[in-house]
Image 1 (cartoon, helix red, strand yellow):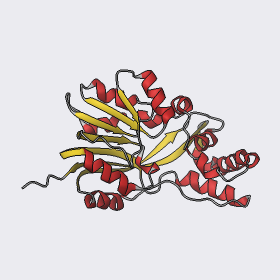
Image 2 (cartoon, helix red, strand yellow):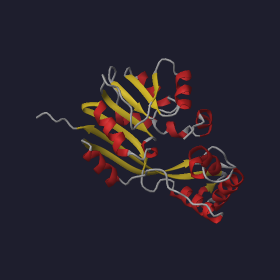
Image 3 (cartoon, helix red, strand yellow):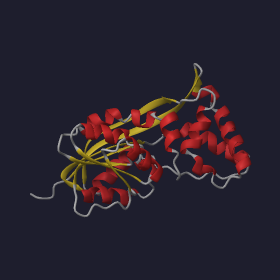
Image 4 (cartoon, one colour):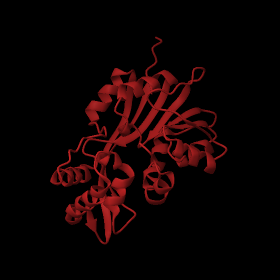
Length: 253
């Protein structure tokens, strides 16, 4: 999908702000070679680089990478897809990924790429949406679309703990740490927080909807959430997050 990098940073900076604590799980060390998978506008990539690690940030969005390169010129950023990236002569001590993997429907391809590019014993630290993530918003959107005769098609991948840890083990990882938790998240716009959130992250749901019907659908979805997601003059969404620390299993005995 097309990303608006400036809108992302202006109204949805919580995405990378919450990733600060994920860096603590990674515990980067000076001199390490680290890949930031789905780096977005590069704020967390730059923080990793400040530790003295050699960091490469990749993202499939040219807009996001362009913004990252402009703001952090001393860090290496590349446009690349999580399911097909390749560094033929390079392996990493760690792969770091914040709020990216739930956008990827071909998880097996992504995990194969990650596993191939990690050194034996290398760390894989990630946070993504877990089972139940933003069910409030997607449920409201589905009803608003159905009211006008449109079909809602699920897009994101929000796995359970068991589903994703089993997949990691299947692809040669040992899971060392898991945290599955709720995170109510305040949205920036006090008037149209849900509408703006959907315009930023859920525009793909309305690809087949005529332009004149899109905003009314979003407004109806937002209004249906007022009793549960609006309090003290602010809009909130109910995030459910899955955070994991794993390592590539060493095969040598």
